[in-house]
Length: 478
Image (cartoon, rainbow, N blue to C red; front, side):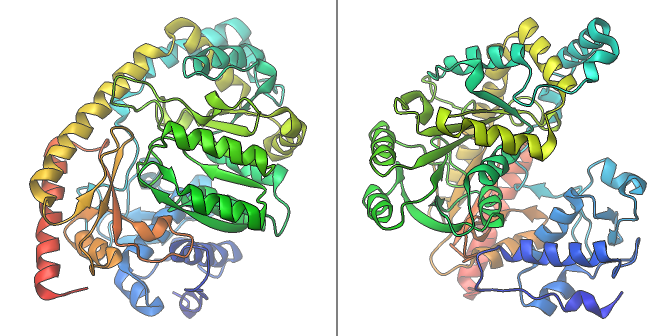
């Protein structure tokens, strides 16, 4: 292994998370050929010591590279550089195996609270298989023709009916089909951000969105969160000072806090956007996962001044691999966003769009959504029960009544990254709050995602968390 792997420059005062900096540096070395195909990357502990970072930072960097198919893992052996071309990547990556590092950790057996995906057994595979077959039978090779860049008209009509159930009334001509929410954020960034523009984000915020804004040269201003949304006094003061290009937010079950905005704050944000002539990007990943009787009311449903770009992903509620979502666009920015989408990938897969339209036509939406909500709600209630049993008096946690995660605040003085590192040694994977901070600071929080785990594993994981908190407190390992 070349010594160059230990000469990647990390800016610990910068805005880009350390794991991303490390992953980007390793990615450049791989792309340049400085790291030979099938060569082994250093063990987690060695990398962490060399760069003065936490084990979790290195784990996350390696996981990020694996998701991009630049590295692969071998059970019990470690992590290796993928051969080129990527089609030659060994089967463990294709099966989605996670790393097995030389620190006594088996990720196949680990309790993975970092995973936000639901079990694949819940995916409507049979219904989609039927939809695929019917589209192929009906259109033959025509099913694979390029699609209009805005998206398949019958699907856009279906989606207008779907989001109307949430109070969003719009026309198909205002709907843009996208290949997942992350593409939507990237397309919006490409269309709207000029180098040096200011963008407001919640603090903490989703790092995927923050990364897209930063990649376009935006300056990010963080707005602190309260229990019912952004702190309005800070938001208005900053709007007067900075005049941002737009405000990025999640109105319900925010990533990572799980916070939902009050009706009063939603209306106030819309008033302020109009007064200070800015737009709002509202991302909806988890609105379908509400566990109360009343469905969420998106910010877009209250948007009478047409200030909100609404981005919805179907990855969680349907199947991640579909890579499908939608944007509802205000008229003034519609043309620019369409052009940015076209230069990104011309159009989202026409075959998948037609299959999705066929699926909706035959199955509707609410029955499957009800099944997913029922599953998520049961997991949420069980997780809360275990959290109260094992964390009461030790840590505090959110009560979001929706989504797929809990936001846990550790006792004062306990480092979240040190805690996650200790939990990693106990075969429990958590996401430290630093991954949702623009500065990468240790916020003393961890995110625990529960929907992908059996109840028994959730209880064991929370019990190990309580033991580790007690041990760290007793030994003052802060």
